[in-house]
Image 1 (cartoon, helix red, strand yellow):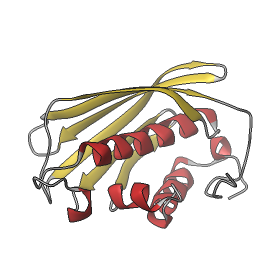
Image 2: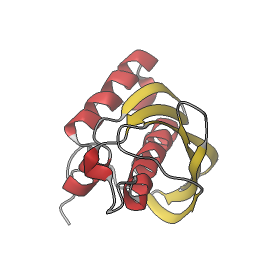
Image 3: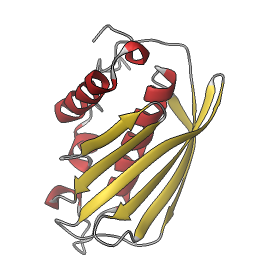
Image 4: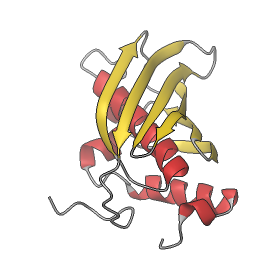
Length: 160
């Protein structure tokens, strides 16, 4: 989609983001499996709220939601929030996650990503992951992202 996201209506932006997720925005199989089934509920400038039902493909050997899959879905939500704020794809320069709990297959999860600082080329985003039924905190994460001023069309795989 060539149109700038900042000039899109909220409805069109939500449609674009949901289509990008369903097509596998990450262009990598592992990321796509970890985020399989994510649904965007609310999207506005600098903020995203998603629902997610933990699939069997995202479990560890003990049948719990794999911490790497949690990190991947947090990264996805953070990237969407940052892109909605800056209209740019950015690279993560610092990523800190605290895990408090986990989930099992078919547990319903809510993920929120919120931009907390936008300082030119640097943008910071906070992501929270909670159980939908009782609000129990599963993980929190903070990312700093940086722009490298490269503007490839969104959804186009890297040539690296």
